[in-house]
Length: 346
Image 1 (spheres, rainbow, N blue to C red):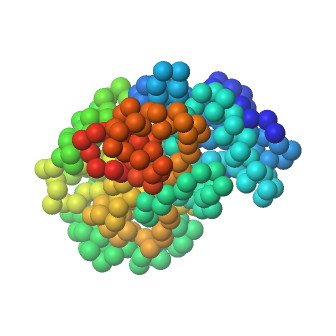
Image 2 (tube, rainbow, N blue to C red):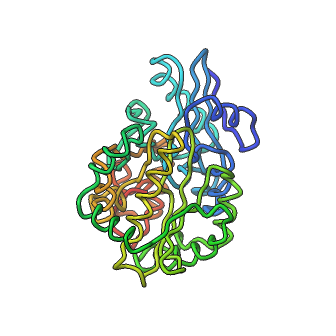
Image 3 (cartoon, rainbow, N blue to C red):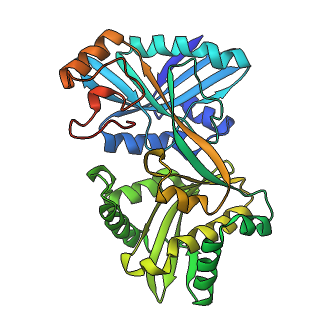
């Protein structure tokens, strides 16, 4: 079995995502972008044996003196696997061996709720965090409307009667406005500094994803009341990032936004609009808002692998001696756990 770490320029990475069903999180250009902001190196683990292939995008970071670790780029870049059933099981020991030989101490992977329905239990510890919501775009438009909860329907109808306008900003004129609203929205929600992306990030995201990325805008009286970035890849439309102006809170513009995108994505022949879940996978108000558009649910899971137990334990003890390095179902890896926060998924 051949296992290697690819860089974003490797032809094998590009060929694999072109041949297997994937999402934009698996694209070399996206991984390169996120790695630059995360302070790591963009890589993908690639394994091949006979007709079997596996590809997992990673950001490789320095973990300690002479030690590295691997983590998923932001989103759901779970493993892409093809080939006979035994390959998906047998590939992981070889992957672990190769990553350890490269100096990696641990591996953290966010699994894709749609593309990874069967978690790789043989790879390491799989933790389930909650559910995400998707819209089945194969259903008739009338069925999708019936699936929408009455409160959402009423407010969408009210917005339409009021003349609120929603459209795809094909000229990207409102991208700077989106950036400003997104940062303000994150600050209102108490998000960490990591999520306060500068305008340059959104420009780079547009460059990285090309025609896959769309900016959709809700206009109320000539003002941008809400906007969202949606990525279209291989029949999946991802609700990636959105923002709204606090001045239009009572108008609930994001409901009209998602109603519009649902119809737009369906008209383009896509199969699923994936809305994601609550914060950290929790069934919070954000999850309930999304759940109002569809009854379809998908588990959000993460994979945690300790590749070098001695080195991992050493890093954990040095970071916080009160933590048990054998506990893999909370924040992971533990040596990156912020000391002032409660345990949560990494």
